[in-house]
Length: 178
Image 1 (tube, helix red, strand yellow):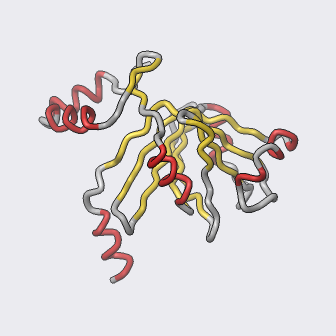
Image 2: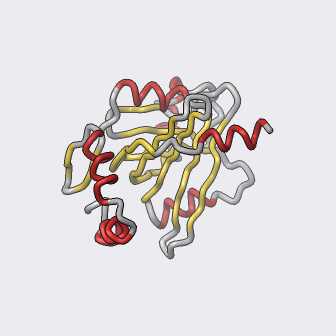
């Protein structure tokens, strides 16, 4: 599956960003795997991901309804990179709605947005999620996280990782800090 569809290419043509997109895509270390854009996680990217105590998790149901959730916990590191193409994080029942879990069960395509507001860094990850709810399987990963009270794990097989434009992060900081 190609990650950039004809509609993406058409949008670049329509809004005259073909050369800009080409520049950004040519400056990142990419490889092509299964006929799609794929950027493996490297040591510095892995370190960035694993030190962040929060991220945004996007899902979509089979009928296209979208959902995004904030995932975070004070003092906790939430994501463990298992290898250059796979990461895992704990999921909790929270309010019990389980919107993301229901979406993953009908459509495994997910997105993760990680933002470091202090260093003006954003990273987007796209992949396919699997839910691990077997207690024996979960127990194999408990040493990665700071809690043993994990309802289930979400494992993401990464399709691609791409730095996200860091413009305007300071706008958010100014708004939050006044």
